Image (cartoon, rainbow, N blue to C red):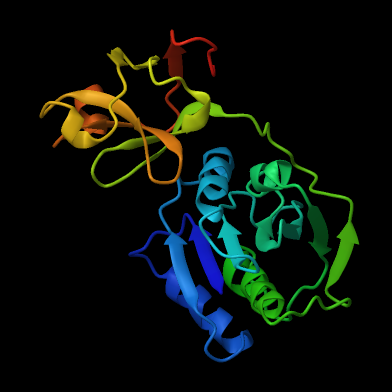
Length: 249
């Protein structure tokens, strides 16, 4: 299985080109799953926490093509990461580092191969896609990869007390793992102070609350409304844990 995680935009011209590149090199019949193409633009830190939360729902041996790459065309490395049986192909800019830091077993390779035709601005299509396809076939071509000790860019693997994604409902996902936040804690976000609710229907219509979402993260929502609009929040806004024992900020 190949899984795509990018900030390319689902409605732009880029995802289709990446999928064609994958199909040219992957084994026939390999499933290609669109995990997300609206990761926060240019934000490798938010993307790293979101990718780590999503990846655990995918099977062993899944190959993630993960691209949030504002440094494309620069001297940043291109890498392959194996983490607890899953595979990740992408830039070494912190995007893969949360997955790596939270894994029990990892291996890493620098991609030394460069195709004859390589767009300076589209490594997702020309460089990462062929490598991801070869990895999905069980191939680690020694003329294309050099094993090394780990990733060069490593972000803090602890919880991130910020908004990392806003979905089309206006729900704000944070980088806080819900298991680390007491249910009796309140969250401070912008000028709001919100309490926990188990599900949307436990809150009144129009009421803001936080809950544990389906991928295990703290999410701030409004029942039948948009938390982003009602509270005036966006990606990167800090979140403060108030009361309930230990603070995650």
